[in-house]
Amino acid sequence: MYTLKKSLGQHFLRDENTARKIVAALQEHSFNRLLEVGPGAGALTKHLLAIKDIDFRAVELDEEKINHLLATWPALRGRIIHASILDIERPFGEPFTVIGNFPYNISSQILFKMLDWKERLQAMVGMFQKEVAQRVAAAPGGKTYGVISVLVQAFFDVEFLFEVHEQCFNPPPRVKSAVIRLTPRPAPAFSGEKEFFLLVKTAFNQRRKTLRNAIRPLFDEDNLEDPFFDKRAEQLSVDDFARLTWKMR
Image (cartoon, rainbow, N blue to C red; front, top):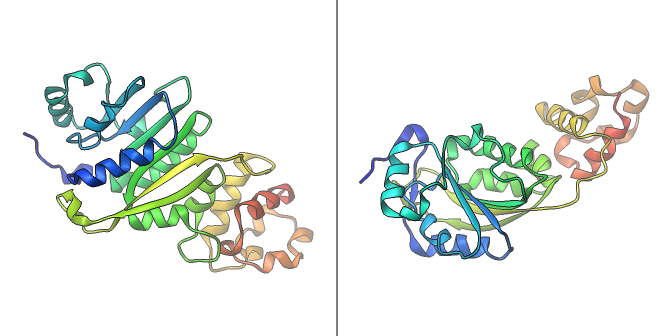
């Protein structure tokens, strides 16, 4: 037996059909190494352990859940990292894939962690709050398109796979949920990653303003006279932001 801890954002998947759909989406891309984030009570874990010929590991912060997992699936012994996903180093030296029913209270930080690991990340299939999933997958022009949309889409193709009903969890969350998949794409031709991140974050920090006013400190006045700067951040594609980095100071 185990307890649910609100402080850790624990909402455990209990619907078998949904678990199978998530694992099926994972297996649409081949992989040899897999990290599960937040296995919890093991709804996904039991299916992942059945995948043959892979190096499987899981990262779990809650010691009580680790004890439950080890008691239920002894094959997990030596495969569980007792830590927060946000605090661990890259779990494999070779390319790997990530899967998880991610804690919603740290979902944005987890996505930035995926960006940190992008050189080795082959794919990620994850459950997020629906609103976050929509933001990650959003196209330019809408209110949901923002910093996380641009930064993730600069390095990954994002697929919004399916929604998951609240009653599929224990306890049911007060928000809608959805599963997305990230797969690597070639990075856009920016002048530098640091400049790209700075530009995107600065532009959306004052998204209601025109680019001319929002990102003025990053450009010479001569460049700002271009009519392109009459646009707002949400109107720019990933490639638009990349091209702008070449004009930064």
